[in-house]
Image (cartoon, rainbow, N blue to C red):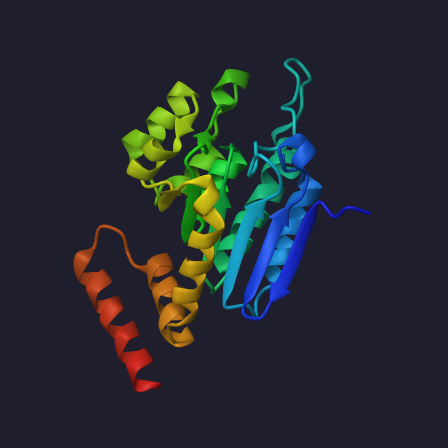
Length: 238
């Protein structure tokens, strides 16, 4: 049976692949649970690579909003819609190793979120990013919450208010991704980047990951003190 989320471990690298290419790797709640489990199973890896099979990285979620007039309760929406994503995002945040996202084709909805919350995102030049939920009367506030630290608010607002696909170069300028790579050079670039990252001492890489996740935003003095403390701890442990 085809696994909708595949995990492969090769030495220090764990590769997690969304494997529903016939549907653009659109994420179901079941897939969200499988993805969270794959991340948990990769705790011993030094690097996690997240990618999607086929032409698209991830074209969004496979879930329809409640029909107008269905009188659904907020608690039901929380259980069926929000909680699976809250749990998955919490698992992403708890990962102590760098996550490298590889995005091609459509990286829409939750696909844009994955691209934004990964530590490094390499995107092909044909990749597009989109939060189009307003077209369906949905405020994508949960997705926006995950991207607040990745993008300037005006860029994030434009992505949401326009509901239009954002080209890879624009996503790079907005801080959503790390680099734009020609499709035929993507694998070479990925392997070279991982080899370089794995050549650094694990304790130093972990400290960088922790610092980026916890450094206070907008408080330069507190950020400097935290950075100095982490630097001292790493150097003293060598």
